[in-house]
Length: 361
Image 1 (tube, rainbow, N blue to C red):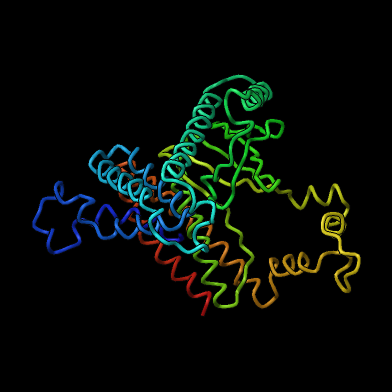
Image 2 (spheres, helix red, strand yellow; image 1 turned 90 degrees about the horizontal axis):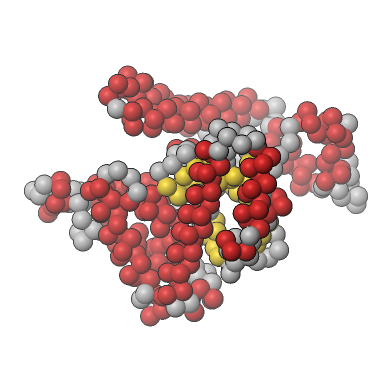
């Protein structure tokens, strides 16, 4: 799952990788029919429903781009993926990969899930674009959004269980209108709270007008670096949130409710009082009436004296690197006029990565 984004991009070059196809022109070489990587990805996506949802939307984003030649190639991969879904009931898959209910679903039901996910995203995308173009006061737009969600004719207040595109392990059954909101931003991102089948809530931010493929890459970098550091017993307590681009200028991400330390202190007097109020554990010994796990997370996130400097350097480097990656992607899309900036980014990224790796020595 971690490297699926790059593997989907590698499909653009798969057709010219083999010596048997090297003599053909670039135009005729791009084809699904002779791509071993596409076969591998389709098979894995069919076998794992969570991977399959991500794979499907990664492909649809590429189809929606302006490059028609590549879009046609990715369209063929989508067709093959949907075609193989029909044959899944004739195969034997591990229950650890597919839930029993998902195995018993027919091919039409599996396709229906993808169709319903696409319809959900299209409906939210249309509404997000409308609100970003409106000049009305924010409270009035929030009221309109909640009215739209509360209207049963829009099929968002209540729906049959549907795997959330952002996280296929979570099944949602509707959106809570009373908690919906719109952020103070030029793009007016939507804040939506999904109700889940287990009774919990899952908040997301839906944005239209922003290329979230850059955010996907940055979050992937955070996740990868965190895994590498954990292998060296350096846990900096990073919790990357999921991001999914559903179009070239559209996507969603998990919303993490948070408060600043200043607000916590002003409302509770001290940070310890806040932890006691929200994570109490009266029977604990030596943790001041707070859940020991919360105390451990807080202390380790601040860093021990011997590792605090290394952690601060790590976070600083990752933030610098994420900024460079975003600028590098932007300069590549703006054309030859920004070649100098792109060249600088290409040199700086490997240097910062080498420093990150040095932290683990």
